[in-house]
Image (tube, rainbow, N blue to C red; front, side):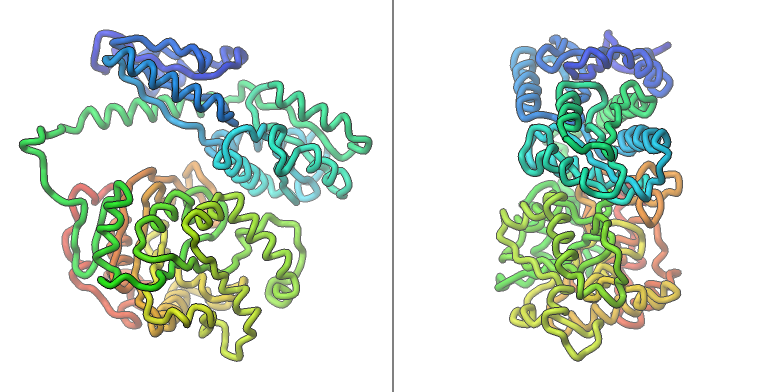
Length: 555
């Protein structure tokens, strides 16, 4: 094929893995890439310690390990740094492994589904034990919990557990002992594409149990077509990102644009956040000039669906930019649970609060959010727990925890996601209704829901200085019925690393700008019609021209 790349040599794509078994997939990956790239790529397999990177070449490195050890990650970083020092003319691109990628999840789901079918069991009577090595860092172990959750959701299993082969909390053998006593058919799935030493250890742990009749080891998927597609997609994505950078004309420093990373529109601001200092500058436009005693932050923690909740990286960046210690606010919701409890959420939730509290702690631990809050010494107030503790006479929608009233007058940031043109900062406050089942306030239509959201905004706005920040810092949701990602609300795609936020004093302007950036005509929206009536309006934000370079980023 004719190549449409620069330079005299074909770029080299290296799948970095110490497993020789992957060699059986390399030709399939090469052919899949060629159909997209328009030329025959040089795709090869090489061990992490011996990557064939030479001077004067352009090399793309694609790590393959689904469960990176600290040694492997350090070795890869050390090797790439050494090559760059030795060969200043070598151009190296690389990405990282996402075990929760839809194609990886799909391959594991297919493998577990086949095992369930072979058992002749119903998914509702089966449980999953994901068995990673666990020899990486805490972030990689959090990824394992996310992977287990995604497989569990996809298959509709009764329960899901994680047990690590090389990490003590929780150790796989201990998890298996507990599962062997439960009346479920348990599928033990290694977090590995191929048979490895860690997979063999997991097999031995099952065999050593005296009572393991309800435990079935699932074979690794091997050269599954979805893994082939995963490698090919990562290669083509890296190449297309490189091409996109090459097509951008970079001005010399003498003639470089001096346009700021902030765009004012009405009473709101659109900002592209690059680091902590730029976030500090964006927040300065909406927070009081005098440093407050506390800053309250209502996060968006709906569940585990990738990219739909306030992730640890975004929360870490916000907390590092605040001028005062934070109080994190959220109410409990059923989508953060891992399943396993059977009770009526409308009538019996309070009586089961110990189990709910455990689910809450697990969510914060598995996602890594607990670590972020601990690092910044942020206080967490769960409004559901506060509601049950205080037993107020007022109805739930009029409830504010007493501990928060000590900080009346402080700013409260609704820290929402770019997740649809109406699910923004105002609707984020819906989670402050303390009862964990909020169906009655959702109502029959969007107008009913909007009024409930505005009622909560007016209640909290009477005690705190409301500020809106809608973020797509590291991920933003674009709904697509054929999207790669799946949640209980439907399929979607993710827009990665846009760095964009909208911000305003009050919530209205930030929501208007965020909605418009996602392609919504706010002048013809039933949700925003209610907002106009209940909370006021920002005509300039609603009608002014958007920055041309941002018009299509999130739409």
